[in-house]
Image 1 (cartoon, rainbow, N blue to C red):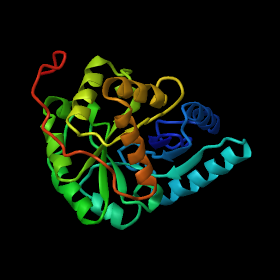
Image 2 (cartoon, helix red, strand yellow; image 1 turned 135 degrees about the vertical axis):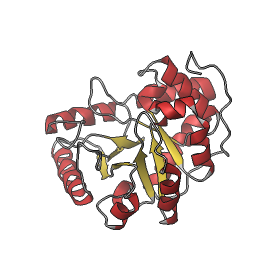
Image 3 (cartoon, rainbow, N blue to C red; image 1 turned 90 degrees about the horizontal axis):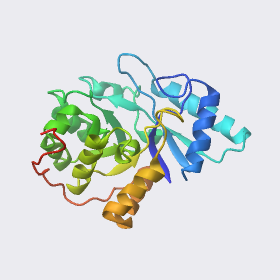
Length: 255
């Protein structure tokens, strides 16, 4: 299993704080069946600064540590990049990078309470540069929850999305879980990833999320998400049915 989004690098952001934290996360990842994991610390979000070269260097160090401890987990470099007005520049200047540093896939984070006015234009510019934007955890963005067809418009124009496994598993509550289901049913989801920060409050939950999806939609959908994650590693196209507008319905009191 491949995990596209984690905060397993130690002492760089709000994820693992020590190498021992990273080791604990690695053991938990292996228990979940994860064999390859992308370390995707926050790039620049007002609190943290993790530029490309620093991330690549730290990933190499972490891989060496895991090898020394006989932990069979491959770590690949990446970043969680906050949408901003200069996103083209930081990609051109190579301070920001796509997953694996060589694929076209970029994890794009939006503020949790809004969709900035320039988002559509910036997603277009990212694609114009040859990259593939992937909006992370849209289910936790309150603007998408209130107006889900904003997300539909982005996906219709080529943007992909990634749900957090713990959201699908219900760890953030029934409202967010129900919204995850709405997005899946509207073909607005392409990946499931952990966004794991630790082994306690923000763990992996990948197995549990896939079990929920399997029971609700069948093993085919689980395999689709897994194959899409594998496609990212190979820098190939992901699979997905045409997106649909989210039907306006009462969502546990949200609408």
